[in-house]
Amino acid sequence: MVLAITVGCRPDANGPTQQAIEPADGTPQFKVDPFWPKPLPNNLLIGQVSGIAVDSEDHIWIVHRPGSLTADEAAAAQTPPVAMCCVSAPPVIELDAEGNILRAWGGPGEGYEWPQREHGIFVDYKDNVWIAGSGSNDHHVLKFTQDGTFLLQIGKAGETAGSNDTNLLGRPAEMAVDPGANEVYISDGYLNRRVIVFDADTGDYKRHWGAYGEVPEDTPLDPYDPEAPPSRQFQSPVHAVLISNDSLVYICDRANSRIQVFQKDGKFVTEVFIAK
Image 1: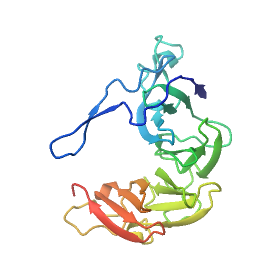
Image 2: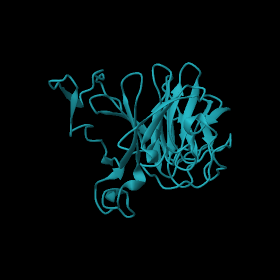
Image 3: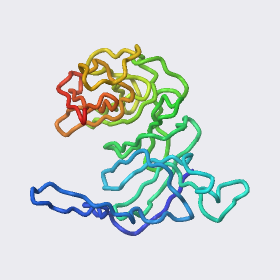
């Protein structure tokens, strides 16, 4: 399903949704704009928002979960309809900085497997859109053009083979693309315990690693204990991956309350604990 809506306004590079308030120490504070985004047209409704990204034009992309809407919320989509409003918006939505919807698309289609439970979105330096999922069978990521044309699938729904397999994934959570090498880094994830890297165009495997840059293991782990020595393994979920401007790779090891930092070849640099 593709929904295209043309609007005549240009995005504000600073974004209208946050009002900065400068405190005495100079640290910026932000105030939520409860009226952003603007109401969607055609009685469309957004479910649980599970990812957000910004493209090269400062357009905001979100992925949400249509399946999270209740029958009362999506009353017009019931068979038969029980009210005039509402129906779910397509799962991928592009908005300008003022909160106007520009286009929306997504869902099952030919040539790829749409995730059961949408999770994570990334817009790369070519403005291609990457999607992941966190459902029990969502062992893959998808790549599309901005208009929703399918480009690439890495992994297969319902198929996984552990944290050292080089072809299959294990409920990946997030993605980030390195423009210099044209490689996609995947935090893999809700089942596996690693970050894995592929060619962003072909999907060819490049490398992977676990916590501290070591080989990941899938043996059962003890429950998290803040008083125990830090675990040598990531604890599922390996929930996020980001590449900084100084070419470091940041991995969110959520259940272990830490962020680990690596060089792009997987060499461990440092870690920081958050509310240990």
